[in-house]
Structures are given as C-alpha cells and as structure tokens.
Amino acid sequence: KQEVTQIPAALSVPEGENLVLNCSFTDSAIYNLQWFRQDPGKGLTSLLLIQSSQREQTSGRLNASLDKSSGRSTLYIAASQPGDSATYLCAVPGGGNKLTFGTGTQLKVEL
Amino acid sequence: DGGITQSPKYLFRKEGQNVTLSCEQNLNHDAMYWYRQDPGQGLRLIYYSQIVNDFQKGDIAEGYSVSREKKESFPLTVTSAQKNPTAFYLCASSLPDLNYGYTFGSGTRLTVV
Image (cartoon, rainbow over all chains, first blue to last red; front, side):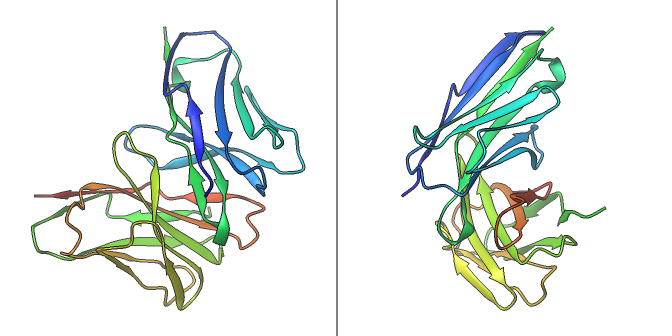
C-alpha cells in the first residue's frame, strides 16, 4: 500500500527566504506526482504535476523535482512571500487512479 | 471557465438526518471522487466513480452513499449511519489517464448540530 509522508509538518520562515518542502512515497512505481496548495477552509489548488518521466517542473517561483528511484519529491519556493502562507500537499495516484495524499506541510511566511 | 462546483459551502445536519452534498463539473472528466478531510489528518477517499452508472467504495465508505447518473454530477449523501460526519468534504475529478492530474472543488463544510 502506497504511503506518502511530508516533512516538516509545519514551517515558519521570514519573508524573502528560499525554502524546500519534502515529500516521500513508499512505492516508486508512480505514474506522476501532484503538488497542491490549500488555504484555510478552501479546496485544493493544483500547483505542479510531474510525470514519472520528468525530473522537474517549474511555475513562476515554484520548482518541483521528482526522484522516483529514491521515492522523493521536493517543492522549492523561491523568495517566499506572506501570500505563500498555506498548507502544501503532495499526492500520487495508486490503483484505480485514486490519489494517496501526504498530511501536508503548513507554511507560514512572516513579514 | 471549466471547473468543479460544490454546494452548499456550509451545511448543518441534525442528528438522524440524511443530507446530500452536490458536486458538478463541466470539465468533461470521466472520473469523480469524494474525499473527507479532518483536522490533522490527510484526505481520505470515501467513494469514486470512473464512469457513469458505476462507482466503488473508497477507504471510509461506511455511512455514505453516492450516485452517478450523469457524467457531470456525483452527489454524496451522508446518512444517519455515519456517526461522526462533521468534516470538510472535497470533490474532485480527473481524466481516465490522469495525464492532467486531479481538479478539486472548493469544498463543503458539514457540521452536526
């Protein structure tokens, strides 16, 4: 059974800092990996989707990498801003196209 | 714009009542999913449907029911058999091959009063 772990569970950084969020998964036979953002009381917003054949994806200040062999993905956020404060979730599909989620990293960017 | 609409945003249920959460998508996605989110826990899959008129139980289906009569719609009923229904409910959809990942709705917060 696929298990997804995210470390750290919470992170507080000053504005402007570059930061890395980690995601690990136990079964490396994944089809792709998706990073989401969730604001309090809101739904999930897709940030980046990395296919299994890709090493990384970039969108603006966000860069996600994928290392299938080691079962790891990282989300790099450059020059963090208070508006980046949210919970970040990673997820991988399993059998029946069902997604397995990590429990998330709660990020707070302080002025 | 294409997307997923969940309604209502907030829902209150009395003990012993059944309530139905709506999920509609105009993305032409074949697959739809219902997840439950509790504080401090990850998202847990309740039910999913990969095609009209077919659906499967997820990890926590007890006390819930669904239907999939139209491609666009996947309503979730929380029955009185669900003993702890207070949670945030999220609906999602995807293409069959997952090449474009999942798209989520904005969620419904259900509270038992």
